Amino acid sequence: MGPCAGGAVYSPAITDFTFMVKDTSYLFVTGPDVVKSVTHEEITQEGLGGSKVHSQKSGVAHLAFENDIEALARVREFFDFLPLSNRNHVPERPSNDPATRIETCLDTLVPADTDKPYDMHEVISKVVDNGDFFEIQPNYAPNIIIGFARMEGRTVSIVANQPKQMAGCLDIDASVKAARWVRFCDAFDIPIITFVDVPGFLPGTSQEHNGIIRHGAKLLYAYAEATVPKIAIITRKAYGGAYDVMSSKHLRGDTNYSWPTGQLAVMGVKGAVGIICKGKDAETIKQAEAEYTEKFANPFPAAQRGFIDDIITPSETRRIICQDLALLRDKHLENPQKKHGNIPL
Image 1: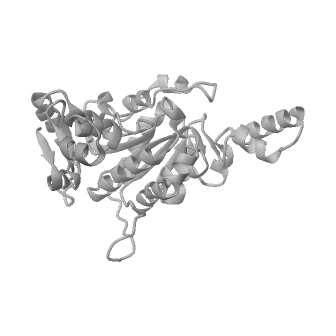
Image 2: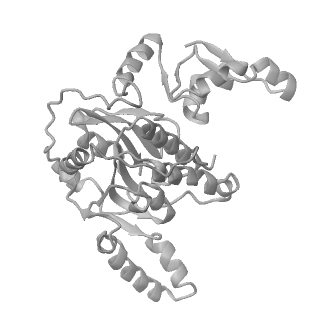
Image 3: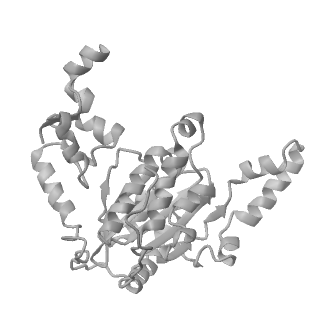
């Protein structure tokens, strides 16, 4: 709620969650005066380490609140989702939202045009109890959504690609954000529900030179390591390595489903045909795109190979997830005994 500088910043840095208050909270290792003397940069405390900086750019803070009153109220709300310790079950609250609720609007939510975005928040709000979703880090790496919700009154974790931001591509920030979230939920035995619509990892020299391979591997590692119930729903695109790292069956996903609009493939139509038909004439390319679309722009090939458990009607998503969560409530899985894993930090 106030300033924190120097070595003291590493106290909040190693906590599970860090919240800040706008205009009063500051976090920086070296203050504006030191920065000015060393680098000759003129910058204010707010510009160097204010709540906006850390909740939108650095990712150090998980949420920023308008004032102290809102901070205290929202943290109480947040705390209500948490188990008391890693040895306690997730809290269970009375729920008047039936597990069998059908949401017909989900059947038409995904646009027919695969390049047209939609808001994944709508999917989440229609599936979870009473549309109540407590999002974490909403302004940092918004191309991926994380947060808490409840299903039949019990706390669950949500991870979802956001097609409205960067078409849902995974980049370095999104990978690290989601990986740390998955590891937190695994540490406290909170089930993870993943909604997938990802066309791939963000291409470009900046991402490659800054280590997208290493950072993307963090998310893969986190999902593979997690022993909590893992349920994944593919709503549309699920391409290449980005599909793999999003709680795929290959990373020990317990149940994996696809909506009829799902597309599981190594890459999108244009990218794949561009490689297969390189140097061919326009008519051949057009014909190849039609063939590729017919073969892979649907979830059936993946279902035939066991990569997904079923193709489900979108409106029944809530019912199926609640059914699986009940089935997986007593899931017990142990990773090989070792001092600790070596996540690619």
